[in-house]
Length: 267
Image 1 (cartoon, rainbow, N blue to C red):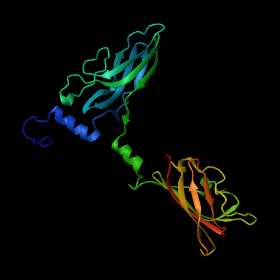
Image 2 (tube, one colour):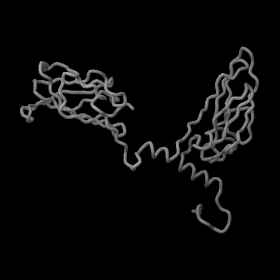
Image 3 (cartoon, rainbow, N blue to C red):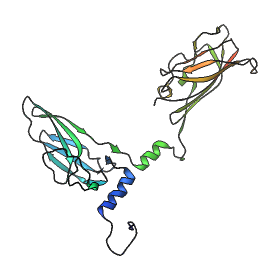
């Protein structure tokens, strides 16, 4: 085994070792790293494409367009009445693109990475499509996964977000989301003049709940029917569907219905 990151008194870090480090950090695939203008393409004419500053990785190999500069790619003239697609690939010596799959780590001499796809309709370029994903930085990923305290973000919701039916009294309520996991608790009792029959399906929501709270799949939730002091309790069938409605059916009428549900939101 050879030392890579330590000082040995003579040049010793090889390009292959550096690629191995990058493969272990960002993977062996192809992506654009967050830097400069993220290699954004700019079509200046039907024959010229500018590629703005940025950096990309392909099989552990990194190449860059310097900050404050751009690369130019010449687009061959189109033909009237004909449609064509071109590829702009990352290769050491650019030529008319022929997509060659390879892997420099395995000793191949050519390893193309398609970066842009150019669509021509006749002599006009109609689309320039970026083919690589822009990989977010570690700082961005950290912010997406956690709040400023370093804990997983928890989002709370108001009763209005659940659109509970107006003919229920609400004596307890909470709704919050941890990541995509939704937690919902509510205690309801029918208002005076409202009659609920046994073994009938009722909705506790008058409209769909907030979009980001809706279950990815229909999910059964817990519900108990009981009296004021939890007496005469009975199990009640209840579920939340993918359209954002919450239903229940009780085998026997009770004064109170207490719901507790946990489900995975669609987004």
